[in-house]
Image (tube, rainbow, N blue to C red; front, top):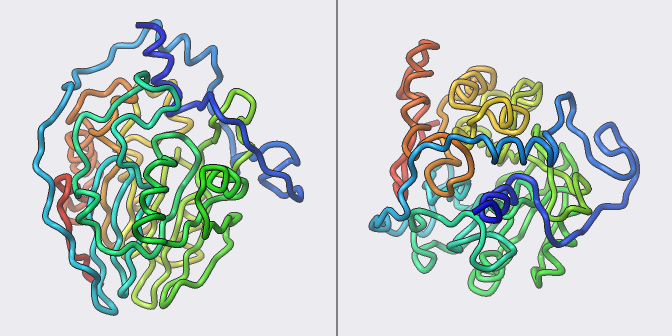
Length: 339
C-alpha cells in the first residue's frame, strides 16, 4: 500500500528518467536548476512522506463509465474560438482555424512503473480517433500526468503536429522518439499560421527523476490571436506571473486555469492553486472567460472526486464573480467563446 501511495507522488515530484538542460544563466536558471520568480519552492521528499503517512483523502470512484463527447468540428473559422475539455489538463483549443492540444494524456496510467501509480478514473472526454487534425501541441512541464510519451507518439504518427515545450524538455521528447519539437524560454514565441505561441512564467517545479529536479523549465502558454489571447496556465501556484501576463498581452479572451489537486494546502499551495485562488487569478488576469481544468481525472491529492467544481462555485459566490464568466465543462463538452 505504501508503495502505491509513494508512486502516486511521482506525478507531483518525479522519480525516473533523468534528463537536463545546459544553457546560459538567467534570472530563473542558475546554471544547474530552474527557479520560480518568487518563493516558496516545492516541498521535499520528507514532506511527501509526512503527507502520505497522515493523509485523509476524500472518496474517489474506481471508475466512471462515461460516454465520450461528440467529435469536435474539423476546425473553426478565422476569429472563432472553441474549447473542449478532454480531461485533466488536456484541452482542445480551436482558434483562427488552428487546432491546439494542451498537455495531452490519453493513457490509463501515466507513470513509469507498469501497474503502479494513480490511474485515471474516467475515459478521455473525446476519443483519440475523433480528434480533428492537430496542428500544435503545447506541454507545460515534464511531470508524467502532463508529458506522456506514448500519447505524444500517437499524435506524431497520426497528426504530425509541432510540439512546443519549455527549455530542456526537447531532449525528453527526442529520446522518446518525438520530432518537430521546439523548446522555448519564458516570453519566447513562435509563429504558427495566424497565431503566436508564447511561453509564459508559471510557479511550479519539474522532474522525472530523483536526479533531475528542476533542470527543465515549467511554463504556461499564451496563444496570441488578433482577436484576443488564450492563456493555458498548466500547473501553477499563485504568483506575480498572472499580473505580468495581463500587462504584456491584455485581458485573455479565455483563461484555462487549474482548479484541482489542491489539498492539503500546507503541501499543495506552493505548486497548485485552489479554486478560490483560481478565481483570484481570473480577476488578476481580467479574463473575459475562464475554464476550470485539472480535476476529477487522476486521484492525486486529498480533495474528494467532484469537490473542485463545488469549491469553485462557492468561491465565485464568495468573491462576487459572475459564474457565467468562470465555468466548467462536462468531460467531452465543447463551447464557443465570444470575442
